[in-house]
Amino acid sequence: MSFSFNHSSSVFITCPFKTSTLCAAEVEKLGYKVDQIKDNAITIQATLKDCIKLNMNLRTASKVLWLLFEGKASNAEELYRLVQTYDWELLMTVDGYFSIQSFTQNSTINNTLFTNLKVKDAIADFFIKKYNKRPDSGPENRGLQLYIYWIADQVRIYIDTSGDTLARHGYRKIPLKAPLQENLAAAIILATNWDLKSPFINPMCGSGTLAIEAAMMMTNRVPGLIKKDYAFQRLKGYSDEWYRDEQIACRMAVSHDVLSPVIASDLSADAIRSAKINASLAGLDTKIKFQQCPFEETMIPEEKGIIIINPPYGERIGEEQDLKLLYKKIGDFFKTRCKGYKGYVFTGNPELAKYIGLKPSKKIPFFNAKIECRLLAFDIYEGSKKQFT
Ligand SMILES: C[S@@+](CC[C@H](N)C(=O)[O-])C[C@H]1O[C@@H](n2cnc3c(N)ncnc32)[C@H](O)[C@@H]1O
Image (cartoon, rainbow, N blue to C red; front, side, top):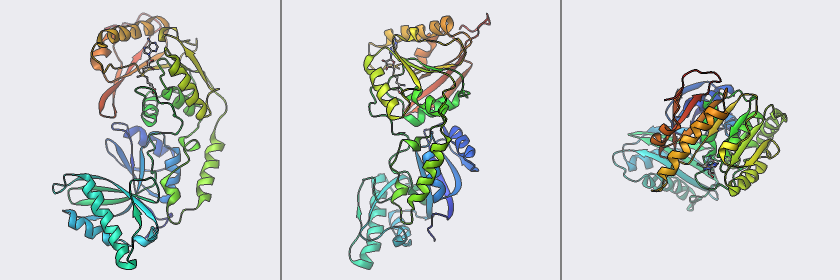
């Protein structure tokens, strides 16, 4: 067993459920070969040094996990013994700090916290045997962060190189109600195959996530230019120079030209205010045109592009009737004001979606946390082609 930033191992990159093909495309664009695609993760072969690049560049990822070692364990005792076989001094000192997260599907374990506890005990006892004292441990994002993936008797011990989730791109300080997670918003935009140079219109923008992600893509800004704290920075053997080099490469790749307008509107003054603050934290306040208005009054440039709307889905009783009308108005808005555009509605409520009154050309499945959602695509023809349901 060896540990070095130049040693290649299996890397497990997690992402929101159903977005792994989009994440795989991003990873391939960075020059890596994807070995396996699951529903919420992909696997590649890479070094810890590569993980710096992956963490900073990927828009759809949640975690980048580097495989430290793997083995077999049928129960908690065997897990304890397996973890003790590793020389933990390669990774931390007795005065260090470590934290553990896990995913467990083993018939002898009914609480994943028990997995964390067993691994923590095994590492602590490794040091106690040698020094009669142990590194501190707990839930904080500091020191060595490990991720245990235990299915049946197969155990994989990963170094979590991300720490705080990559789902947050670091610009959203004011989330408002029902915001999209940033990596999900990026995945939604990538699923539209937007060409990055035609107008991007986002009515009902809320805290601005979709518009900010679109402006980031258009100007080739990656999340690593905003987010500054990663678990790889705290690993033994890490050199800040590698991170600085990647930061410079990311900065050099930024394009300052906005090729087409990115427009974000919302009825709520609070939403527009917070979207503007979030955009300025992303360095993009001058690249997005904000408008406080009912969605039907959003400015629509002559040049054709895409329109994405993430309307409320309605969680409270009594909202249903108002929302039916809102969804119907979205259909009317597409038909009357957005001819020649490609329209998209992201919703977790298929019943309400029917009120749009247009036939989607595609229904792309997503999950927003536990809610099953669809990105509905509408071709809004300029001519008379039949499109109404
Ligand atoms: C689900 S939230 C959008 C969340 C957003 N995607 C984000 O990431 O923050 C729906 C938004 O629609 C806005 N909204 C609801 N009815 C509207 C209307 N008739 N015109 C314009 N905006 C409206 C609300 O103010 C709210 O900000």
